[in-house]
Image (cartoon, rainbow, N blue to C red; front, side, top):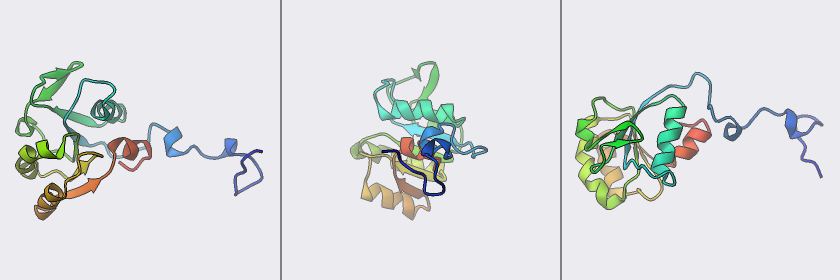
Length: 150
């Protein structure tokens, strides 16, 4: 049985590609300054995958990890205060208990938004950021990127 496109009698081969099939994302999309808190050199980690995909999509990335100096030739900042830009987005890849040490720094950086990736969610920290006027989002950065919603 062949799947049919509801708009005509042809098959889906003639349909426009879905965002998942178009890894480039929406053409002309805004390129952002993005900080990854909890950056990792391990390819199996989601923070690493986000780093690679954000860079591939043309975003300017800044990596933060207190125990690293570089990841595959990319500079890693030991603290958020060391990052030399005001980020558009901060995407989190740290355990909520480790996030406590970043909250004041995030507020000081005043990003456009903070993404709480799966496993980083914290109602207390989210509310604290929102009270400071920072937009928060509980979502997966990788999904947002691959569905042109970033």
